[in-house]
Image 1 (tube, chains in turn purple, green):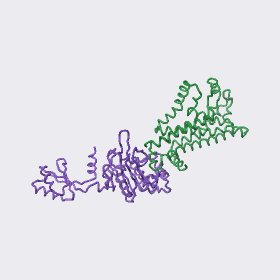
Image 2: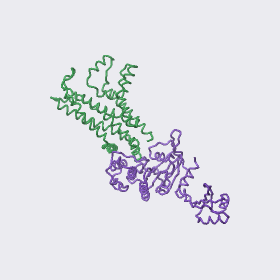
Image 3: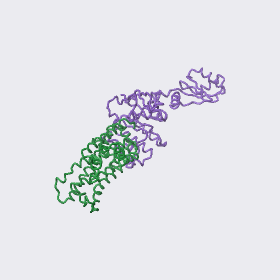
Image 4: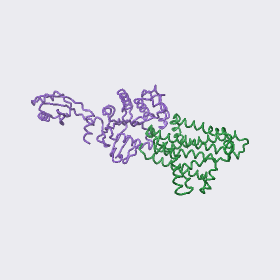
Length: 297
Length: 268
């Protein structure tokens, strides 16, 4: 079942195009990451699909229209900063959310325990630290056991411990089989939590697919020698080398299969070249991301 | 409707300014009138302080006190309940959580209607209690002689609150909205009416400004000045109750409609 379909979405602020003809499809059970640098239109996109920003063009539909106008009752969302009534305590704030969502038995204590805030349930929201606010927001998104959860930069501004806690909570939620849509500029986070990813920049969709497909299986090896052109010529003959880039004083080899590094060393030596540098580079979403976004200045 | 009213109640019943303003109103409405007990002698037309407390004039004097209190406390309240939700960004969150914009807006409108009703009921209660303690022999036709003050009082409160509501939604910032509210009622409208309108056209249409109509619903009970005005300009100082009521209804609908127009279209 399709959870969210976005078609041709465009949002302009004066001359600036925040979202440019964006199309996406999120299926049930996906953990969908929207990845992009700051100001790439992630939050604007989420704002539009949550009904707080009006798009100029395009359309979106939730749950194939199954819930009509009330789709937001089946979505738990947290956009940018956690927004609660500062003069109300944690329990009152969650009760209010439950009232809006028409949830009869919100199991507030259980949720507060899940995000480790039960001991502060009667403290006013304004006394919370940023990490606690963020955790309360996650609890509030879980009220009524929604089918879809939307998180926007869920670890923004948290300390390392807070980041680890929030990520763990997200993974637990994903394991429950919920559909999660998460916007982030932190690649590591998307890579650890998400099954699918869409990369956007300047409001345009640059790539989308499973995390595995976006991160290609290429093995990357950095090699260097006194005679770089000769090394390049030697390596080009090796059938598994798909592509060679200059990488500072070294060459970056893209190998379509895992190859033991000593094999490359021997290959060079057989051509009369001694390697001054040999390093296996882990291919991550980060380099892929930089590569994809760099081409579109 | 109850769903939306209950939501507003959950939001506001622990808000300090809501509690304070309501408390002030409940205490001050009878208290200010009762300070009249301390001035036993009054200048010629009134002579004694009795008129403040007896039927049917208690409706006028208590209403006039209420006019000031509603202008301050409930006008401010109607601004605060809108603008704080902008500054805490909770309006945005309410909609993300599941309210439609229309529901959110209706919740606020229902709430100011509910507050106006409560304020009016309290006014009726106070008038009946003070009146029955102060009037030596009670005739029912005297008690109910000014019964039209009750719907007028309600409209008066709603009129102030709908201006506040519109300013809240349009301006979004508490301080600026409060300033505009006070400034408009206390001098901008006066300048428009007396300084501009009466200079250009000496005509009683100068009365049909929104907040003047609201004030004329429960006018100042001394009417001597009004007579002098009539002889000088050839028309009455105050709108008739019916004219004032209709004017307030029309303006309130415009204010609320304008605010709704903004809410439906704005990016939050």
